[in-house]
Image 1: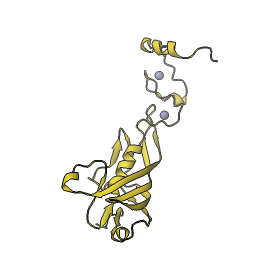
Image 2: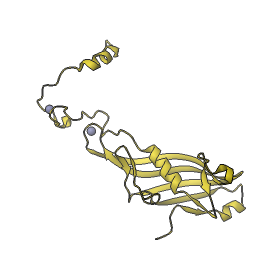
Image 3: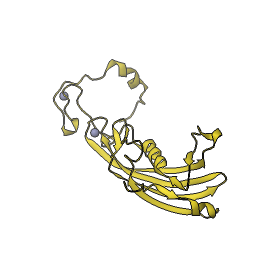
Image 4: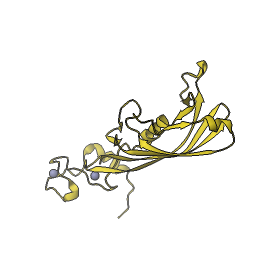
Length: 181
Ligand SMILES: [Zn+2]
Ligand SMILES: [Zn+2]
């Protein structure tokens, strides 16, 4: 197996505190950690997709701060019509890596630092997971599927008799501002 593209050697960085170090790394992220693809509620970063980290490393007291941007393509299904949708994720990151000590083993605020390498993979993975859209739409006004026949309403009316308003939503209609149109 080739070495992970997300491992950054930190020996030199640690020797020169105060000097910001820029790192640009890219590679697949889906299979680097745990072997699972990144998936949230039907949207995902495809397992073989190229993610990118464009970050600065700063030596701080007791650790290293990593800040910058993480990006990757994503894909999923429109929440309303189920057509494939996708795009590019961009996430700002600012995280701290610290060596683990006995008292900080369960420190969930920071990433572990061990040996002479800093592993960007968990940071990239976490940032992308948080950035994945939970309920993507193919377009903001997607008409969705007919609840009766399942036809894609973007293709035009399906001919079904649609009940004017579900009584459960009548309350919400009453809350809508009036006097428009
Ligand atoms: Zn749609
Ligand atoms: Zn229909």
